[in-house]
Image (cartoon, rainbow, N blue to C red; front, side, top):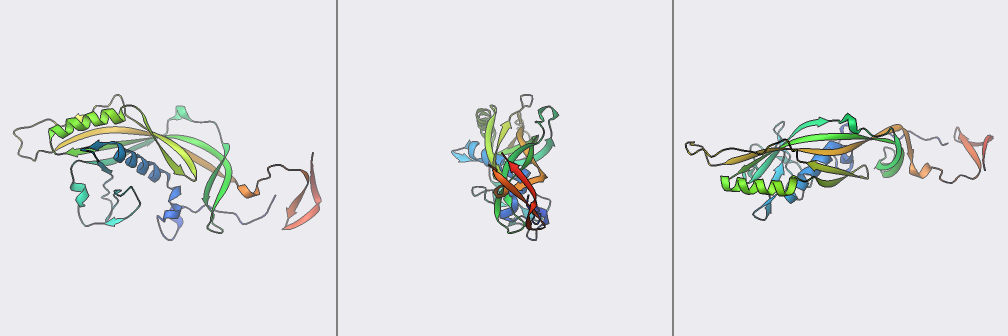
Length: 255
């Protein structure tokens, strides 16, 4: 046993500088969504160039677009960004987050992970009881293309790349977590029809819905122990530290 100051978790919303790169590892959903966008951007290709997949955020004056290798950055805009007007493009919209009760795992199992310490601001290894919570995240994809010919080419690209279940990995709290992209069998690819009488521009859109399957590790913080303080092979006498002093009154014998 040992006595020390309780090492609290540093949450991204409880720090002075919001969204600091060193604490973004606790934003689980952000990492999963960015990992999915990165996978789609690398695999859905047209004219030997990847199609930009992004979430168009209109909730504030900041537009988050992942373009250069999906590195984190903030771009302040006053209107539509030039990349948003390029063709072809895909605007992604997060839909639902569901918990499949049938896939719940066993109760807490002890596991290891890494996080930033609130005492010395260093990354350390910890172990605690962890439970895996299965999650299903649905996302709507809206592709905007120049003409009908591009739309049928993209349909074939989507069938080739997304119909069979695809996998990608993310890093969360020092753990490698596998995620999968599932193309729902019951969903149809909606392609808007050709209308020769319409005065509008000749742009075509394709709308599909995908499902992201992953698991969220829930850490029981009451059972957390720093890895450097774990007794692996005890032997001999174990003295107990009481009030920061070693006492021989309480002594345990290990055979």
